[in-house]
Length: 298
Image (cartoon, rainbow, N blue to C red; front, side, top):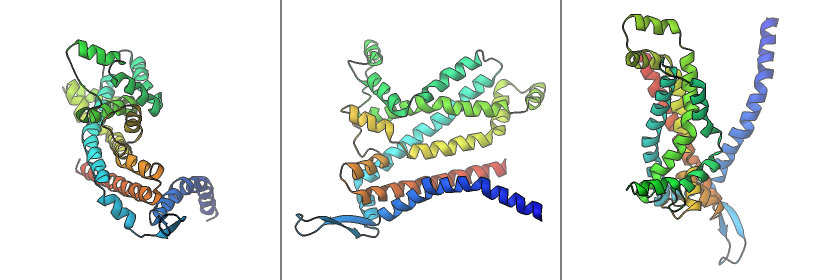
């Protein structure tokens, strides 16, 4: 009984810092955002007096959902997720499988080369690519035009691919390292047995290796979904640095940023943030349930 008490006491001591930090950086900010979203500021009199904070209930949520700019941001986000998530997970998995194959050479060099873009801060990466996208400045655009290929990276049809390209450049190598590390943990005797049974490289990769690292694939997919919904830095830099079609409300995060710091409407910004957080939570739950059912069937 004393041993169990000591174990519980030790567990409490070790877990307390985590729960304190979690409360301070997660629970408190989310609670404050929810509280802030229930209030709005109004000017007294004819607009010449000071402002006062009044309780508005769900008015900020209604205003956000009723704003076409906010809804269009979710449409852009949907298109981004549909294109970006399969490219990210499929590309990272393909690169990891190539590095894990017997045909791969100079594995450490390619791991470092593919991971290095992730070490570049997101703002710096976006600035680099804005330079590479800008006509009359970019050697890439000049080479494309010399080859007879004309493409405006800042046009309405080019803005989304441009942002996806930056995000892939930043995160593809990072997720590849996660998949490669999981592949290194696969029991080599299982792969040898598959080879003895006559399984080729493709069959071994997709029928044995991928199912065995399913947990890593699910984790990367979950984090990629959450990260996709938080799209902000890349389109913000493109919006600030060029005359592109990326507006200040292009994504829900940018909408909340504009509402808070350009319009001073913190209640509306908080409501938009809470709605985005709820969307992320629902999608995360859906991904977890879907992959859980697939795992049980497997």
